[in-house]
Structure formats: C-alpha cells, structure tokens
Image (cartoon, rainbow, N blue to C red; front, side):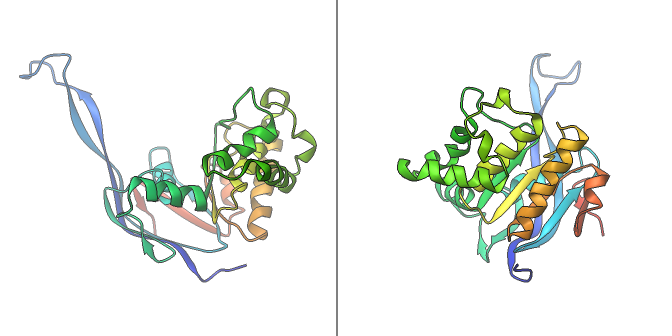
Length: 241
C-alpha cells in the first residue's frame, strides 16, 4: 500500500454559502422578499490525504464535515483556496473536466443508499458505467466483480426492497467501486443502519483500504472514529490541532 504519495492537497480552503433569509419586519423591502446571507462553512482548511490512507472526518453537527467531503470529491467548488489532485490544480477546471475527474477518481457512499428501487443490485451497480460510456458488454462483468468484492454476488438479481439495510449499503459500496476509483468517500455510511449492519459495512470499507483503496469516512459515531488510524476533527469550519 502507498502511504507517502500525496493524493489530495487542500490549501486554505474556504466555502461560503449564500442562504436566503426573510427580510426584517419594517424594512424597506416587502415581507415576502428575501436577502442572501453569507454563511461560512469552511474557513482556511489545510489538509493532505495520501494514497492508501484510511481516515475519519468527525465533528459536531454543522462543523463542515460533509461540505469538506463534497469539496474533496469535486461535488462542490471551494469559494477560496487551492485544491491539488495528484499535484494538479482543480479549481480552474471546467464543469466538463471536473465531472470527468470526479467520475474517474471518486466513488461515493452516502447515508441514504440512493438505489433505484425498480433495478436489481447488479443493474444499480452498473449505473456509473452507463454514465462513463463503458461498452455494454463489459458492464455486467464489471458490476458482478464489484458485488463479489463486497460479498454480495449471490444477491445480484435482488431489488433493493428485497435486501436488508446493510446489504443495500454494500450494493452502494459496490456501485462506488465499479469504476475502480482512486478514493472511496463515505458520508455517514452507517447512519441508517442497526449496529450489526453498521459494523459489517465498516469492515467492508476497512477491507477495501487494506486492498489499497484510499478511504475517507465522515462520521459522528465514536465507535467508528476509534478504529480509524487517522482522525481529522472539525469545528466551526476549521480543523482542530
């Protein structure tokens, strides 16, 4: 496993959201008007993630955990700062270039499984391959291999409603794996699961890291944090020392 090569470098990353807020009573604008109020979600974040790392991003609700993960995964653009992926700047990329970088290098696992209920597990896992124009004859083989990696090949033809919560999340992990990304980014992946299913999903992510994947997990669960070799703590949009 690689553990010295920088994969992600964030330098003074900031993110500000403009949130709508109703005008104050008796102001010069009508009661139905709204004004945009800047809310700073991240403030000067510096972070380096090396190839092959396993780390947790943790902190209280509203600390900026998910925002940071979404910026790392190129789902959000930072308001300020510099982002290097494998030594190359990301912030100047076009939307098309950013989407291509995201599709080729990041696999996402969310708290909500985001599986299509009318599709089988195998069909759900194939979806990223449709989006990146993988030839049809290869999609099934690649999806089946991804399901094997999460020990679910025997459930490939079952729809989400026929699977347990833990199985659904492992299908979501297989979907994240199917394009062979550089990183797996998991945002509260055990949040909707019972304890036993949650531990099974966590073990799957740890095994993927042992096999060479870089894995970043956003979580507020201390039982998960305690198992992580590296912990990044956020509060009020800043990384704590």
